[in-house]
Length: 351
Image 1 (cartoon, rainbow, N blue to C red):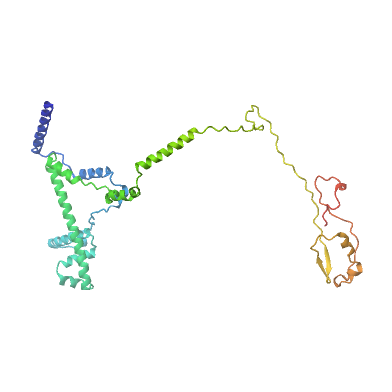
Image 2 (image 1 turned 120 degrees about the horizontal axis):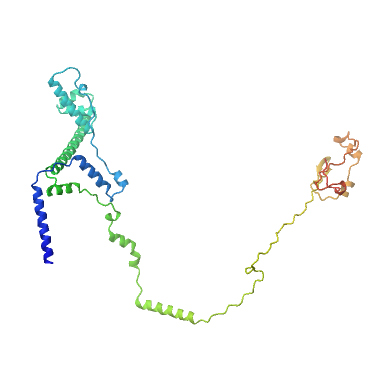
């Protein structure tokens, strides 16, 4: 065991010597560029599993606005000397810097005019009210200061990272600096982190805390009661069930199929007759239909009007019996009837 410990200590000493030797070495030929850092950062973001895609999309993203390409002749048209070109170039750079901060072209010109003094500003912008102009100018100054603070912070971080990666890429200080700058892991957004577990336990298991537990004597009493019930059920004699009568109509043991007789329903023949006759009578000199169909035919024949009584009515004063028709009746016969002798007397329909 002592020899193993000596070997481990010697390995540690060798590693320390190697680190000291690496620190004194010149920088390697292959330096890490900004593109390599960006690619590695993107790969590390893809490996993150502590955040969902929906949460990643809802995060606020910050982008640096690029400068629009504007020809220099727009600010200094025509021919000019060297001083005019230098002043127009400076003015062009100031305008583009303010546009990158989120200002429009008019706001950028207003901010540059404010640097020349309040008199110059009010003289060039007479259409503005003084109070509104001062308020708008304060907003523009806040945007410019915020943009400059972000730009300076980003520049410092970039310079520090490039300095640490390019001077000694294999040194311990560079590795520690790289680890510290890249270790930006987000905290887990779990719902339990914002809630105390003790409160959850008190809410969920409150009914168990309030209920009184049974004592030992109560448990023993219930066990003795259950034991007596089991002994009573075991000592009961088996009651013989009566034999059920055999079902002689059952066919569960047949080996051959029984021919079943088809159940053909009986079709009852329906007799088709003429529609019932309609009867009429005269009441108070008017013809009225009889609703009661139970009047005997003999009574109707006895009360039948004669020819003179019919002509006495003003409506039928020119009534004449006329010549009798040779066609007595039109019959609607069934296909099964072959002769008129088999047709009943009342089986026709009067035309």
